[in-house]
Amino acid sequence: MKTIAPLPGGYTVRPAERADAEALFDMLAAYNQTVFGYADTTLQEVAYCIDRPGFDRMIDGWLVLAADGLPAGYATTLGTGDRQLIDIEVAAKDPAVTAWLVDRTMERAQEMGRERGHAEVTVDAFVCRADESLRAQLSGHDFTTGTTFHRMRIDHTGPAASPDGPAGVEVRRGAFDEATRWAAHEAINECFRGQFGWVETPHEDWLERHDDVPIFEWAQLTLLEVEGQVVAVRECNDKYVETENCGHIGMLGVVEEFRGRGLAKFLLRDAFALDAATGRAGTILHVDTNNPTPALGLYLSVGMNPTVVFDGWRRVVPVTEPPR
Image (cartoon, rainbow, N blue to C red; front, side, top):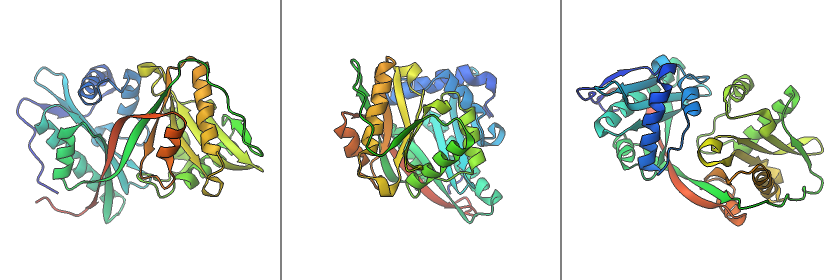
């Protein structure tokens, strides 16, 4: 790892506090406007992320302030599972601030690995392809692109027909009891095991994150069952309701032995119908183009179109690696 770059003169740094949410939202929305062309976040989302489960804002995040006291950069290091896979996020307009924040996140990632006794950690960053400054910083830190994600969207100009349920499949809407949530969690792990960035989390942690996040309700989880076995899962949330009046499919998976039977297509069209019925302008999801299933082709086949491209950048870092 490179020697940590100095923070440019005129800037100060401290952990973000709950009271910073509004000013931090303004900075992140402006930053995203230059990258995506729109804010791509909400005040509620920013406030939640400052103090979310599994994140220690005092040591896992850095808020850089300009001389006028306003946020000029922000970064977080979030460990998942046993902290062997770590996600970093960095946003700053000044490339020198970006460089300092990337250095800090990488240093903290190594610390997380040492705290858990790992020899190395895998660090991931998900970056819009248009964010040339951050991409250059990650490349300079020996990251390489591991996969590519497309944000897909379909617009609803009127009611959408509700699809017929697949033969022999029971549709369960909502997960309101512990047994259903256990079954859903186990099926999700089975669907996504081995995919880029996926880490299985303890059940209690999974429950806590879902209970705590303000844009999700257990009614938004839909399960498909065959003879009592959960074979497919769709998890929706309200991430894009405020910003784009769109529904969001946060996760959609089918257990391997039940793929190719039209279950994913049913869950997609069912979500479209539900969103259209509630007056949503569209439905959004993200797809890993290196997914072992032909997911991108599936989404295109039901009328969705790509709107933004992200790359998943990755680096495996020895936790004892000295600065150089």
